[in-house]
Figure 1 (tube, one colour):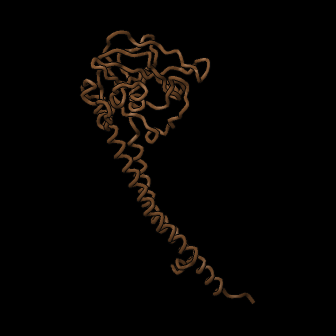
Figure 2 (cartoon, rainbow, N blue to C red):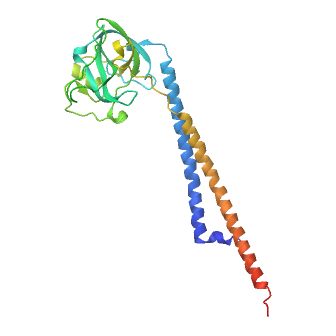
Figure 3 (cartoon, rainbow, N blue to C red):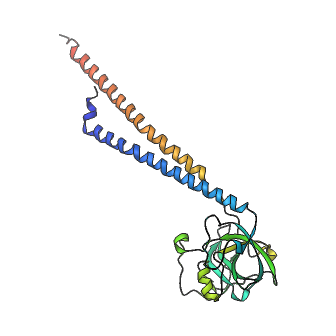
Length: 264
C-alpha cells in the first residue's frame, strides 16, 4: 500500500522534507550563536558599567584604538572645556527618536592633551540646517568630567557616511583621528559620553545607558527552528499514513462493489 511513495508527487515532497530538516537545524544553530554573542556583549556592558571609575589616560592615549573590553568603561578627567572649537554631530536622535545634534566639545587636560567629550543631545531648532545651533555652555574653569569611554565612530561600524562639504563646525562622525587633524592637537583615542556633571537646565540632554540586547529571543528562535526540524518527519509520516489509509479505504470500497450481486 506504500508504493505511492514512488510517485512523482511523493518523491518531490520527500526531497523537500529532506532539504528542510538540515536547513532548519542550521538556522537554529545560527540563532544559538546569536544568543551567545548577545549574552557575551550584555555581560561585557554590565561589567564595564559596574567597574570602578579610572582616570581616562589609564585606558586611552593619542592614537589608541578603544577595545571591546574598554568600551563603556567609566572614566574621569580633569581639565577645562574649549567651547571655541566645539562642533556638533549631525543626524542624531534622542530617546524619543527626535532628530537633532550631539554636542562634541574638546576637553583640554592639564598636560595639553585633548579628550573629546560628547556632552549630549540638542534639538535641531535653528533657522536652517546650515547654521550652527545654539549650544548651552558647559561649566567654566577647571572641572572634573565623568563619562563612558567609547571607540571612534567609523562608517563601517555605524553605517553613517562621512559626508564632505558640511557647514562650518558640523561633523557626521565622532573620530579622534579626524578631530586631531582639525584641532592640530594631541587627541586621546576614542571619546567620552558625559554622565557627570549634570548640565544646567538639563540641556544638552545626557545620553542614556546602553540597553541590553534581547538575547533570550534568539534562544527562543533556536528552539523554534529545531522544533520545526523535528516536526518535518513527523508531518511527513502523518501524511503518508493518511494517504495509505485513504487508498486502503478506496480499494476496500472498490472490492465490495465488484463482489456485490447484480439484481435480475
